[in-house]
Length: 391
Ligand code: RFL
Ligand code: PHB
Image (cartoon, protein in one colour):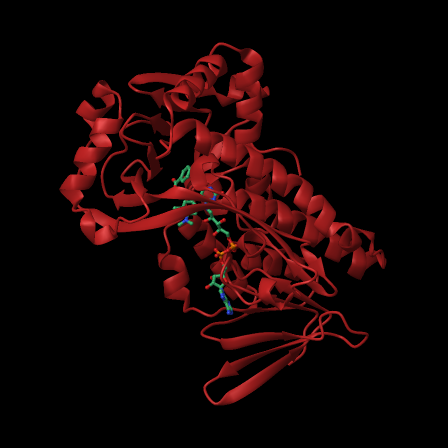
């Protein structure tokens, strides 16, 4: 097979780039290790920055998001029972975020790819990248049953998430990896219950962090911080709801509607960046190159900025013969990635309980939250980062 851009990974990053390039007449093939059902079954992000929303519209995939997504003008931070609003609109001069599930937007992207006869090949095994930095063009191989299939291309996009093969194809003496692993994870529960609050609540408490989020007015998503040693099986639904209530302000806990979980999983928290994001004709995008702890809702949104820079770089290359956008891709993408890392680390440190916290650390954390809500400058800084820095 032959294509212009071979994209490894059929998550949001890979599908979005494929769809955008297709609309400009640039051919792609997407290779995905899992079945479509599996990809659509993963419950992940829920909060979209404006930049992501605009990219969905540009990809002609925004219709359902615009109809069903909820615009959120603010979110709450609660600190041991005291709940205060971060008014995004007020502190950013009118910006907001959209609550729309990653599952839904991935479904929209798959449907758009189907409608345009986009080539997305599922259940591929043993994907390998070749000739990435040679004079001859690159190619990708994968196994389908007993056959090895070869795809010749101009560029390879590594959009295959944190565990995919693309980043590992960059030689060790070229790749630099920066990592911070947090000593806890998030236990998440999805339930068909009315959300406890119209806006998200990020709750810090002596028993640990909790988050009240939602997917719609009938579907709630809640998380609690748990030790890394905990397993999903350790947490019955009742135990989850009881623990969540202890971490929320009393009036919020009192009105929390509980019900059976329809999904329950634990995700470890990690900050990670791989540099550079380009090696020869390979470009990394999204979780393949970087991971943030989910506290700032930046993972998917940072993938979107990578895709934005790559898309424009590709357009300049193919339509104008100008390679400068691709040349500067890694540098431009990383500048924004590190700012998202900083914000995600800040929100994580501010709101979680760390096992080795001293009384001094606790006091500092309280002072930080006190300062946030006493200063318009601090609130503006938090708000402009939460709605998303410009691309
Ligand atoms: P994905 O979604 O991991 O997709 C990569 C795809 O590549 C496939 N793959 C392979 N394909 C072919 N061959 C191989 N050898 C392959 N190996 C892997 C995988 O099957 C997969 O389909 O990466 P992508 O597209 O870069 O998208 C990134 C986002 O998924 C991620 O950043 C977000 O989900 C992070 N995240 C959040 N981000 C936000 O912006 N806002 C949020 O509110 C938010 N909440 C979250 C989150 C992530 C969470 N977890 C579980 C990590 C909440 C949670 C709990
Ligand atoms: C979610 O709804 O899954 C969600 C929302 C906000 C976050 C993280 C996850 O910061």
